[in-house]
Every structure is written in structure tokens, then in C-alpha cells.
Image (cartoon, rainbow, N blue to C red; front, side):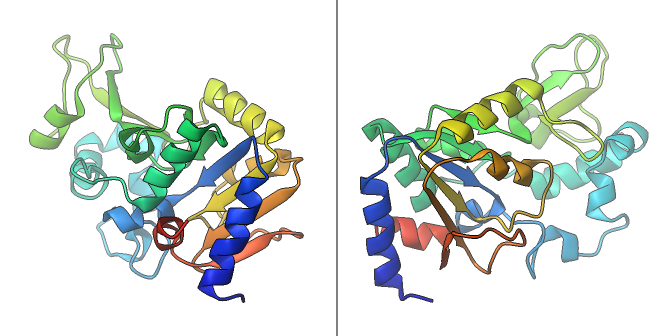
Length: 241
């Protein structure tokens, strides 16, 4: 593995030659903002709960045990005071400079938009959007965070976060937009993900450009030949660019 400074210089060189770069990111992009991930040693999936987190975050559990879903959701998923880190800010800067065409993210925290990114495809939705399942009326996330029990719309319907739970499909319009962006990219930067989560991880197969850079702590699970791999925390690396 090359040293940190060499990695910085190589990534600078790749980006300098790029005109339509796309960033594909996972939970590791937000851990440096204090948001827990799922699969690391200290991640949510390794913690002990009454039910496995994978079950709690499923559509069937939400429908059958809505109050218990919201107990977990408020405690572990709603990080409303989190702030963008160096990675989020650098990506927003590149987009403003015309070097980055889009961000495709598996995260639901909204930190890319908070940092200033505009063209963001949120594959798994966002905690910042919530709607009544009966009438479709938007419901502010602050009321969910401060309340207790199951949030209800004035019409009496149950409020559901606009996040993709297990057993639910990805939004087709978001998926199509992400595929178009990745297909048209000349450089694909993959950061903060081990590429374990499908169907999201399968989107990298649509890339046809010349450079693939993976920035992650530990090699990705997906076998990707011809990849420039940098074993580093993405926030630390991007802050040096």
C-alpha cells in the first residue's frame, strides 16, 4: 500500500484529468460526523437489542411493531445535529467547480446537501422526508425526534420515514438517475463502503470510464480489478486534497 502522501498526490492527478467524476458513498462517509455505521466492529448490527436491527429496519416490522420501530429509529437513526465533515465539504466544492457531476449515496442523513451538494441521488431515502401513509402529507422530522410513540398525521394516519427499509424496493426514479450519472462518468470514486449492500452496490457495474478509486478502511467485498485502492478514512484523505 502506498503511503498517505502518495495517495493524495495520485488522487489529485486523477481528479485533475476528470470532467465528469461521480462519487458513490456509504456509511463510512458519515462516521467521521459521529453517525454510527452498521457493519463495523462497533456498528449497530453488532450491538444487542431485543430484535436484530436488520429485522427492526424491515417493512414488515414497521407495519407490525411500529412503536418499537420508532423507539429504535429515534435513538439510533435520527442524528439531526450532525455536521458535514471534510469529505462532504470537498465533494460539494468539486461540484461547484464543475469537476463532480453527482453524488450517489447509500446514506440517509442528508449531510451531502447540508454541505452544499446539489445533484445527490439518495438510494435509501432520507430521514428529513416523512409522509403520512394515508393522505401523503409531509411531516417534519423535528416533530418525530421530539415526540414519543407513533407519529400521527392530523388525518389520523401513521407517519412513515422516506427511508428504504428491508423488503422495500429502491425508488425507480432515483435508481435511474444514479445509473445515468455513473454510466456517463469518466472517474468513479467509491468511498466509505465495502460494497456489501445490494442492489445499491451493483450500480458500480454501470461505470464505463477510465478511473475507479476506492477509499475505505479495509478492502471492499466486491472484487474489482483495475481499481486504485486507498486504505484510509475518507474525511482525513479529502481534507488533504
